[in-house]
Length: 344
Image (cartoon, rainbow, N blue to C red; front, top):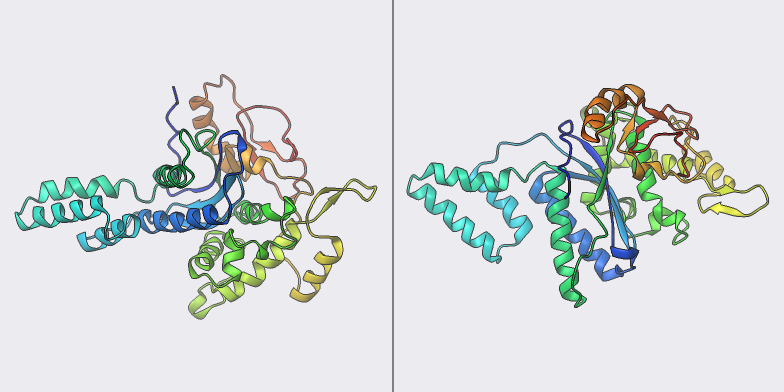
């Protein structure tokens, strides 16, 4: 029996990951494009913000931001519902008719009960992922004439500290997946990612990165009109960040252990874009970005430790683990104890 998810700080920022059963490569171009199309519809419905994402052949990563709940009138709620279901969907048409009839009959209690069925699904990471995973699984099973589970297990998520370098590092980790997998030599060339789409001019993808820099207090630019963050500034800054964190790792004998950017490529980019304020990160595969429960500063992780310790049935206090390969003070809370190594 699955345990209920621990109640976490709201609004939260989460790195969400899921893989196919047996890690089968089921996602070709058509499947990736449909996943992104559906993800954007779920985003529009829930009011959450997809900061960045990547869809690979058998798994996906999403950096998701919950937002403060908005007060939605009936018109705004119906617009959200239509964004997810579509104007011709039977469920949407029936519930829209019910809501309008309740209002016409002054049955406001019934109208509010119907509204709450949808409102409680908004600005909630769990509901976002449940809706996305279920609807995509239904679609792919139908189109590929397959049956059974699509996903290997319940999705994993990592709570990321807002206003910290951990948030931007997590975004880079996600966008660098196709480079580390050896699929492309530059993340902007991968069209099924937040960064690739932002560079290509997709507005929703660009807005995700603007949200990233507004949420990250140390990296916020504030150079647009009235101090607002604009895509042009974010694009240059994030490009520098990607090149610094995406360094190639060799074994000292000329053999590549992890694909990435060469030292020359990094120097060329740094030379063309000025200096970087973001500190040097780890130099090997950052698996803890997916395997830990919380990522952030020592205080952020330590403040949440009692809640996680209780939920996991741990008897003894567990101090936040420091990542050995990181030199900027990232800490994690993991399900297992021991030293925190990037290649775990």
